[in-house]
Image (cartoon, rainbow, N blue to C red):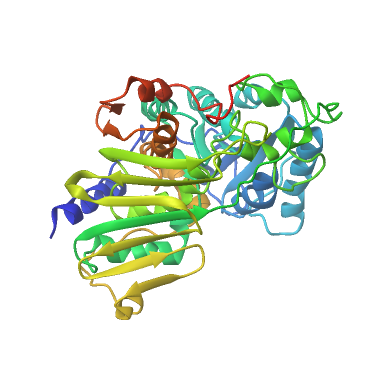
Amino acid sequence: MSKQSDVSRRHFLKRATAVCVAPTIIPASALGVEGNTAPSDRVTLGFIGCGRQCYLKNIPLFVRVRGVQALAVCDVDSWRLDNAARQIKTQYDSGKAKGVFSPVTKFVDYKDLLARDDIDAVVISTPDHWHASMALDAMRAGKDVALEKPITRTIREGQQLIRTAQQHQRVFRVDSEFRSLEQVHRATTLVRNGYIGKIRRVTACVPQSDVPCPPQPDMPVPAELDYERWQGPAPRAPYTTLRVHPPRSYDRPGWMRHLYYCDGMITNWGTHINNGAMWATDLERTGPLEIEATGEYPDSKSFWNVLLKFNVKYRFSGGLEWFYRTEKPYFLVEGDEGWVRADFKKLDASPKSLLTMKVKPTDLDLPLESEKQDFVDCVRNRRETLEPAEVGHRVTSLGHLGHIAIQVGKKLQWDPVAERFTNSDAANDFLHKPILANGNEKPG
């Protein structure tokens, strides 16, 4: 067995046997019986951020997990808030949700939701600039957390999430479905068990879909939106529709293309694609040694200001080369005996026999289950999820490191243990502060 495979097996066995928090702790909701679900199996949820991801995906999928009881929703947009509460009731009325419906409480301030002692866990689906601070507050309030990706805007935030989850004995899960796809699971199983030989090179690509847009006029704030609360920890700026989200709509929001609130595709889709590739190569708990990158931002007049395209090269321990760029979504792992390529729909491999061969009973057997089921199960049994804070931090950091290298404009040396750059004070300045301007403009 290779050293890499041995490390993989130890991580898996650690997750399978170790209890991540005190085993005497059971969900606060274990006070009554829900259908055929034992009291200790019942998990109560609150949903913070009720935009399109929450409304279309997270609410419907979570309430269909056995034993889940949705008790509260929170949003600063009253139209979205009302819709989320109705969505939960609709799921129960239609029979799609498991368990028994309870009246749903609506909150505008997420801290009021966190103050509820009958809520075991929260699902956070807000814009990115809110992710880390809300997750930290939730864990300090005694809640387990499922957090939408990308989980942070800075590397320091990721370190804080790891420490806080440990200190407060909280279950944490990156709410990303990529590892739950059969083709990604199969690719990971083949690579980790040595079926393509020694890994030589990784390529990870995301869509080139971010675009510039002309300057936008100031606009009146819609009556249903508490814009001050929405801005939260971001710099203050006048309201305009393309800064936030389309009123009374679940179309793609503008905040996803503005650096005040998001880093763009380099961390957005990157935390899907790099996630799968880091899982497959067993590099999900470390980082590269070297980063060099180029990228193209829109000009200084563009209102949307995230990267339009980028090309990053990382070097990991052992000389492994990792290429990350805008193209179309997939990851490719090349070894000295073959390769595997996975995306959101399919798996390809060479030799083709890898697609149909049966793995050996002695091979590392990686879990395959939905991210929702994984989170709920771990809230019940107090074990580490398949994507805990440490893994989410390292995956998101890979995007941050590339983005910082583009900002600084030089090849960077990185210490993945100390998590500091060893050759650039300017790069280290970005460890604790988000990138707010694209290099063609000044923040403010």
